[in-house]
Length: 204
Image (cartoon, rainbow, N blue to C red):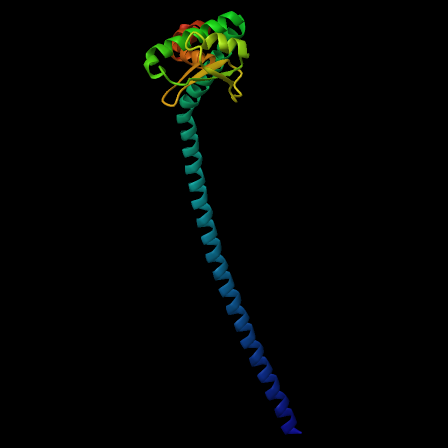
């Protein structure tokens, strides 16, 4: 009987000792977790602080970049506006021309270009390609250069009339589109000042 009681006491002592060990292990684990959590929280807070600093730096950098770009953007918008107005003015001018005026412009341009290299056309087969013209108009233009031209319609989708003279060695082009581009290039400042005013063109 005494031996049985002694065994029960021993079992209780073993269980109590195991419980205390388990409690210590749990406590150590809890302490470790708390310590790890504290470290992680510290790291997280440090990371958040770094991200805040980086975000603010990028925000200020982006703001500064945009502020620096404002004059460039303003200038670009100004140039686009001027170009659009010049294009509109050129298109309006072209639409105001009579058919005879258009043909005269093409003829003058063609003769001027041909005069620069007429020796390269002598004794050679000349092909003439026309666009946005009818055959009779093209024939009237090229017969001043050479009555022996072979006249064909060009596969050009441009809405502007043009005519091209071509041999094996040289090509010359008379085009309303090129004439307009030339006028816009040579008279850009004058046209812009006329359309928008001198103050705007000087840096408004």
